Amino acid sequence: MNLRIAPLPILLSCASHGAAAHGNPGARPEAVAVVAATPGLVAFWTFGEQAGQPRLSVETTNKHPLVEVGGPIARVEGGPFSGYSAELGGKQYFRIPYAETGDLNISGKEAQVSMFAVVRIIDLKQSRTIAGMWSEGKGANDDTGTRQYALLMNMPTYGGPRQLVPHISSEGGVTRRADGSAFPWCADYAATRSEVPEEKWCSLGFTYDGHYIRAYINGALDARPLDPVKDKRDDRYFTQEGPGGKDRGMNPYYHGRGIFCYDPALHAKDKPGGGSDFTVGARYAVGSMLGEATKGKFGGLAVFNRAITDVEMKRLHDAADIAALK
Image (cartoon, rainbow, N blue to C red):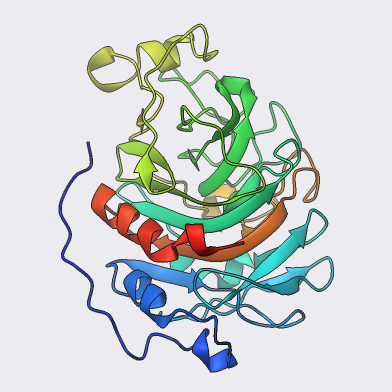
Protein backbone atom coordinates (compact mmCIF):
# COMPACT_ATOMS: atom_id res chain seq x y z
CA MET A 1 0.00 0.00 0.00
CA ASN A 2 1.13 3.56 -0.79
CA LEU A 3 0.84 4.91 2.76
CA ARG A 4 3.77 7.29 3.18
CA ILE A 5 2.74 10.14 5.45
CA ALA A 6 3.01 13.60 3.91
CA PRO A 7 3.32 16.82 5.92
CA LEU A 8 0.20 18.86 6.46
CA PRO A 9 -0.14 21.65 3.90
CA ILE A 10 0.31 25.28 4.83
CA LEU A 11 -2.85 27.20 3.99
CA LEU A 12 -1.83 30.13 1.83
CA SER A 13 -3.78 33.35 2.09
CA CYS A 14 -2.86 34.25 -1.49
CA ALA A 15 -4.04 30.95 -2.99
CA SER A 16 -7.22 32.35 -4.42
CA HIS A 17 -6.38 33.95 -7.74
CA GLY A 18 -8.48 32.06 -10.26
CA ALA A 19 -11.14 31.85 -7.54
CA ALA A 20 -11.80 34.96 -5.45
CA ALA A 21 -10.23 37.00 -8.23
CA HIS A 22 -13.46 36.40 -10.14
CA GLY A 23 -15.42 38.16 -7.42
CA ASN A 24 -17.36 35.02 -6.65
CA PRO A 25 -18.51 34.55 -3.07
CA GLY A 26 -18.52 30.79 -3.70
CA ALA A 27 -14.75 30.72 -4.16
CA ARG A 28 -12.91 28.54 -1.63
CA PRO A 29 -9.29 29.75 -1.31
CA GLU A 30 -8.68 27.37 1.60
CA ALA A 31 -9.43 24.41 -0.69
CA VAL A 32 -7.20 25.84 -3.43
CA ALA A 33 -4.42 26.13 -0.85
CA VAL A 34 -4.55 22.42 -0.03
CA VAL A 35 -3.92 21.51 -3.67
CA ALA A 36 -1.28 24.22 -4.07
CA ALA A 37 0.65 22.93 -1.04
CA THR A 38 0.86 19.36 -2.39
CA PRO A 39 4.43 18.76 -3.67
CA GLY A 40 4.95 18.09 -7.35
CA LEU A 41 2.02 20.18 -8.61
CA VAL A 42 2.41 20.87 -12.34
CA ALA A 43 -1.05 22.19 -13.25
CA PHE A 44 -4.26 23.01 -11.41
CA TRP A 45 -7.38 24.26 -13.14
CA THR A 46 -10.34 25.52 -11.12
CA PHE A 47 -12.54 26.40 -14.14
CA GLY A 48 -13.55 29.82 -12.86
CA GLU A 49 -13.17 31.59 -16.22
CA GLN A 50 -16.15 32.50 -18.36
CA ALA A 51 -17.03 30.63 -21.56
CA GLY A 52 -14.82 31.68 -24.45
CA GLN A 53 -11.78 32.27 -22.24
CA PRO A 54 -8.80 29.94 -21.82
CA ARG A 55 -8.87 28.13 -18.47
CA LEU A 56 -5.60 28.88 -16.67
CA SER A 57 -3.66 26.82 -14.17
CA VAL A 58 -3.45 28.51 -10.77
CA GLU A 59 -0.63 28.38 -8.21
CA THR A 60 1.84 26.91 -10.74
CA THR A 61 4.82 28.31 -12.64
CA ASN A 62 3.22 27.65 -16.02
CA LYS A 63 -0.35 28.78 -16.72
CA HIS A 64 -1.10 25.95 -19.19
CA PRO A 65 -4.05 27.63 -20.92
CA LEU A 66 -6.76 25.12 -21.82
CA VAL A 67 -8.32 26.26 -25.11
CA GLU A 68 -11.89 25.35 -26.02
CA VAL A 69 -12.44 23.12 -29.05
CA GLY A 70 -15.89 22.76 -30.62
CA GLY A 71 -17.27 26.06 -29.39
CA PRO A 72 -17.67 27.86 -26.05
CA ILE A 73 -17.82 25.69 -22.94
CA ALA A 74 -20.27 27.06 -20.41
CA ARG A 75 -19.21 28.24 -16.99
CA VAL A 76 -21.89 27.24 -14.47
CA GLU A 77 -22.29 27.99 -10.80
CA GLY A 78 -21.13 25.44 -8.30
CA GLY A 79 -17.62 24.09 -7.98
CA PRO A 80 -15.21 22.95 -5.27
CA PHE A 81 -12.48 25.55 -5.78
CA SER A 82 -13.49 28.63 -7.78
CA GLY A 83 -17.20 28.26 -7.02
CA TYR A 84 -17.76 27.48 -10.70
CA SER A 85 -17.33 24.54 -13.04
CA ALA A 86 -17.07 23.96 -16.78
CA GLU A 87 -20.01 22.10 -18.31
CA LEU A 88 -19.19 19.86 -21.25
CA GLY A 89 -21.89 18.48 -23.54
CA GLY A 90 -20.07 15.69 -25.35
CA LYS A 91 -19.33 17.89 -28.37
CA GLN A 92 -16.57 20.06 -26.92
CA TYR A 93 -13.31 19.63 -25.06
CA PHE A 94 -10.21 21.49 -23.91
CA ARG A 95 -6.81 21.23 -25.54
CA ILE A 96 -3.18 22.20 -25.10
CA PRO A 97 -1.15 21.51 -28.28
CA TYR A 98 1.70 19.05 -27.86
CA ALA A 99 4.35 21.70 -28.57
CA GLU A 100 2.98 23.81 -25.70
CA THR A 101 2.56 21.09 -23.06
CA GLY A 102 5.82 21.96 -21.29
CA ASP A 103 6.05 20.27 -17.89
CA LEU A 104 2.77 18.44 -18.53
CA ASN A 105 4.76 16.33 -20.99
CA ILE A 106 5.62 13.75 -18.35
CA SER A 107 7.57 10.87 -19.89
CA GLY A 108 10.59 8.62 -19.55
CA LYS A 109 11.61 5.37 -17.91
CA GLU A 110 11.69 6.81 -14.39
CA ALA A 111 8.68 9.12 -14.76
CA GLN A 112 5.93 9.34 -12.17
CA VAL A 113 2.56 11.05 -12.50
CA SER A 114 -0.67 11.62 -10.56
CA MET A 115 -3.99 13.20 -11.47
CA PHE A 116 -6.90 14.39 -9.33
CA ALA A 117 -10.25 15.53 -10.70
CA VAL A 118 -13.54 16.69 -9.22
CA VAL A 119 -16.31 15.97 -11.71
CA ARG A 120 -19.99 15.22 -12.17
CA ILE A 121 -20.24 12.70 -15.00
CA ILE A 122 -23.29 12.07 -17.20
CA ASP A 123 -23.74 9.00 -19.43
CA LEU A 124 -20.81 6.66 -18.91
CA LYS A 125 -21.73 4.88 -22.13
CA GLN A 126 -20.28 7.86 -24.00
CA SER A 127 -18.27 9.69 -21.35
CA ARG A 128 -14.90 7.97 -21.28
CA THR A 129 -12.23 10.65 -20.84
CA ILE A 130 -11.22 12.88 -17.95
CA ALA A 131 -7.82 14.12 -19.16
CA GLY A 132 -4.32 13.21 -20.26
CA MET A 133 -1.80 12.98 -23.07
CA TRP A 134 -3.40 10.09 -24.91
CA SER A 135 -3.71 9.79 -28.69
CA GLU A 136 -4.77 6.28 -29.65
CA GLY A 137 -4.89 6.26 -33.43
CA LYS A 138 -7.50 4.82 -35.76
CA GLY A 139 -8.57 1.61 -34.03
CA ALA A 140 -7.58 -1.97 -33.31
CA ASN A 141 -4.05 -3.01 -34.28
CA ASP A 142 -3.09 0.56 -35.18
CA ASP A 143 0.37 1.15 -33.70
CA THR A 144 0.64 4.83 -34.63
CA GLY A 145 -0.65 6.09 -31.26
CA THR A 146 1.32 8.39 -29.00
CA ARG A 147 -0.23 7.48 -25.66
CA GLN A 148 1.47 8.62 -22.46
CA TYR A 149 -0.86 8.88 -19.43
CA ALA A 150 -4.58 9.37 -19.01
CA LEU A 151 -7.44 9.18 -16.55
CA LEU A 152 -10.14 7.26 -18.41
CA MET A 153 -13.44 5.51 -17.65
CA ASN A 154 -15.48 2.55 -18.87
CA MET A 155 -13.06 0.36 -20.83
CA PRO A 156 -14.61 -3.13 -20.92
CA THR A 157 -12.09 -4.82 -23.24
CA TYR A 158 -9.85 -5.92 -20.37
CA GLY A 159 -12.27 -5.92 -17.47
CA GLY A 160 -13.04 -2.26 -16.83
CA PRO A 161 -16.73 -1.77 -17.73
CA ARG A 162 -18.01 1.45 -16.11
CA GLN A 163 -15.02 1.49 -13.78
CA LEU A 164 -12.25 4.06 -13.40
CA VAL A 165 -9.39 2.89 -15.61
CA PRO A 166 -6.23 5.06 -15.50
CA HIS A 167 -3.81 4.18 -18.29
CA ILE A 168 -0.05 4.34 -18.70
CA SER A 169 1.74 3.46 -21.95
CA SER A 170 5.43 2.80 -22.49
CA GLU A 171 5.03 2.09 -26.21
CA GLY A 172 2.71 4.89 -27.32
CA GLY A 173 0.97 2.39 -29.55
CA VAL A 174 -0.37 -1.04 -28.69
CA THR A 175 0.84 -3.02 -25.67
CA ARG A 176 3.47 -5.67 -26.34
CA ARG A 177 4.27 -8.82 -24.38
CA ALA A 178 7.81 -9.62 -23.23
CA ASP A 179 8.45 -11.49 -26.50
CA GLY A 180 7.40 -8.45 -28.57
CA SER A 181 4.07 -9.84 -29.73
CA ALA A 182 1.31 -7.26 -29.82
CA PHE A 183 -2.15 -6.79 -28.36
CA PRO A 184 -4.73 -5.06 -30.58
CA TRP A 185 -5.03 -2.22 -28.05
CA CYS A 186 -3.22 -0.68 -25.11
CA ALA A 187 -3.92 -3.12 -22.27
CA ASP A 188 -2.05 -1.36 -19.48
CA TYR A 189 -4.55 0.05 -17.03
CA ALA A 190 -5.75 -0.37 -13.50
CA ALA A 191 -9.48 -0.92 -12.94
CA THR A 192 -11.45 -0.18 -9.82
CA ARG A 193 -13.87 -2.56 -8.12
CA SER A 194 -16.59 0.13 -8.02
CA GLU A 195 -18.23 1.92 -10.92
CA VAL A 196 -17.62 5.61 -11.54
CA PRO A 197 -20.51 7.52 -9.93
CA GLU A 198 -22.97 8.96 -12.45
CA GLU A 199 -24.90 12.22 -12.07
CA LYS A 200 -23.33 13.03 -8.73
CA TRP A 201 -20.19 14.90 -7.79
CA CYS A 202 -17.17 12.74 -7.05
CA SER A 203 -13.41 12.88 -7.02
CA LEU A 204 -11.43 10.61 -9.33
CA GLY A 205 -7.69 10.13 -9.24
CA PHE A 206 -4.73 7.96 -10.03
CA THR A 207 -1.04 7.64 -9.28
CA TYR A 208 1.84 5.97 -11.09
CA ASP A 209 5.04 5.50 -9.10
CA GLY A 210 7.09 3.97 -11.91
CA HIS A 211 5.91 0.50 -10.96
CA TYR A 212 2.18 0.42 -10.11
CA ILE A 213 -0.88 2.29 -11.35
CA ARG A 214 -3.38 2.95 -8.57
CA ALA A 215 -6.96 4.20 -9.09
CA TYR A 216 -8.92 6.17 -6.49
CA ILE A 217 -12.60 7.05 -6.18
CA ASN A 218 -13.61 9.69 -3.64
CA GLY A 219 -10.15 9.82 -2.13
CA ALA A 220 -9.72 6.10 -1.48
CA LEU A 221 -7.79 3.39 -3.29
CA ASP A 222 -10.54 1.15 -4.65
CA ALA A 223 -8.50 -2.05 -4.47
CA ARG A 224 -9.33 -5.00 -6.70
CA PRO A 225 -7.50 -8.32 -7.12
CA LEU A 226 -7.10 -9.91 -10.53
CA ASP A 227 -9.63 -12.56 -11.58
CA PRO A 228 -8.09 -13.63 -14.91
CA VAL A 229 -11.20 -15.17 -16.45
CA LYS A 230 -13.80 -12.73 -15.18
CA ASP A 231 -11.58 -9.74 -15.96
CA LYS A 232 -10.69 -10.97 -19.47
CA ARG A 233 -7.03 -10.97 -18.48
CA ASP A 234 -6.05 -14.61 -18.78
CA ASP A 235 -3.28 -13.87 -21.28
CA ARG A 236 0.21 -14.67 -19.98
CA TYR A 237 1.02 -10.95 -20.14
CA PHE A 238 -1.36 -10.38 -17.24
CA THR A 239 -0.87 -13.64 -15.34
CA GLN A 240 2.87 -14.39 -15.72
CA GLU A 241 4.69 -11.18 -16.69
CA GLY A 242 4.24 -9.25 -13.47
CA PRO A 243 6.79 -8.98 -10.64
CA GLY A 244 8.63 -12.26 -10.06
CA GLY A 245 6.75 -13.96 -12.91
CA LYS A 246 3.43 -13.52 -11.14
CA ASP A 247 0.32 -11.61 -12.13
CA ARG A 248 0.12 -7.85 -12.62
CA GLY A 249 -2.89 -7.34 -10.38
CA MET A 250 -5.88 -5.16 -11.21
CA ASN A 251 -5.81 -2.22 -8.78
CA PRO A 252 -2.97 -1.70 -8.06
CA TYR A 253 -1.83 -2.79 -11.53
CA TYR A 254 1.84 -3.42 -12.26
CA HIS A 255 3.25 -1.63 -15.30
CA GLY A 256 6.86 -0.78 -14.50
CA ARG A 257 8.14 0.18 -17.96
CA GLY A 258 7.96 3.96 -17.81
CA ILE A 259 5.97 6.44 -19.89
CA PHE A 260 6.29 6.83 -23.66
CA CYS A 261 8.39 9.76 -24.85
CA TYR A 262 7.74 10.98 -28.38
CA ASP A 263 10.96 11.63 -30.31
CA PRO A 264 10.48 13.03 -33.83
CA ALA A 265 13.84 11.65 -34.90
CA LEU A 266 12.77 8.13 -33.93
CA HIS A 267 9.03 8.22 -34.49
CA ALA A 268 8.36 10.48 -37.48
CA LYS A 269 7.79 7.53 -39.81
CA ASP A 270 5.80 5.12 -37.63
CA LYS A 271 3.91 7.79 -35.66
CA PRO A 272 3.29 10.52 -38.26
CA GLY A 273 0.65 12.32 -36.17
CA GLY A 274 3.30 13.58 -33.77
CA GLY A 275 3.16 13.71 -30.00
CA SER A 276 -0.14 13.78 -28.16
CA ASP A 277 -1.84 16.99 -27.12
CA PHE A 278 -2.97 17.34 -23.52
CA THR A 279 -6.76 17.17 -23.64
CA VAL A 280 -9.59 17.42 -21.13
CA GLY A 281 -12.95 15.78 -21.78
CA ALA A 282 -11.98 13.94 -24.98
CA ARG A 283 -9.15 12.04 -26.63
CA TYR A 284 -8.28 10.86 -30.15
CA ALA A 285 -9.58 7.29 -30.38
CA VAL A 286 -10.77 5.12 -33.27
CA GLY A 287 -10.10 8.02 -35.64
CA SER A 288 -12.26 10.56 -33.80
CA MET A 289 -11.95 13.13 -31.03
CA LEU A 290 -15.64 13.17 -30.13
CA GLY A 291 -16.77 9.53 -30.30
CA GLU A 292 -16.18 9.15 -26.54
CA ALA A 293 -16.21 12.79 -25.47
CA THR A 294 -17.42 13.39 -21.94
CA LYS A 295 -20.66 14.97 -20.77
CA GLY A 296 -20.73 16.57 -17.35
CA LYS A 297 -19.19 19.19 -15.09
CA PHE A 298 -15.51 19.66 -14.36
CA GLY A 299 -14.91 21.51 -11.10
CA GLY A 300 -11.19 20.94 -10.67
CA LEU A 301 -8.28 19.11 -12.25
CA ALA A 302 -4.72 18.76 -10.95
CA VAL A 303 -1.62 17.04 -12.38
CA PHE A 304 1.48 16.15 -10.37
CA ASN A 305 4.90 14.95 -11.54
CA ARG A 306 5.18 12.41 -8.73
CA ALA A 307 3.09 9.66 -7.20
CA ILE A 308 1.20 11.38 -4.42
CA THR A 309 0.47 9.30 -1.34
CA ASP A 310 -2.80 7.77 -0.17
CA VAL A 311 -2.87 10.39 2.58
CA GLU A 312 -2.43 13.22 0.09
CA MET A 313 -5.13 11.87 -2.23
CA LYS A 314 -7.58 11.72 0.68
CA ARG A 315 -6.59 15.24 1.70
CA LEU A 316 -7.35 16.55 -1.80
CA HIS A 317 -10.71 14.81 -1.76
CA ASP A 318 -11.59 16.20 1.65
CA ALA A 319 -10.64 19.71 0.55
CA ALA A 320 -13.06 19.49 -2.39
CA ASP A 321 -15.99 18.96 0.03
CA ILE A 322 -18.14 17.32 -2.63
CA ALA A 323 -21.02 16.85 -0.17
CA ALA A 324 -21.55 20.63 -0.40
CA LEU A 325 -21.86 20.62 -4.20
CA LYS A 326 -25.15 20.46 -6.06
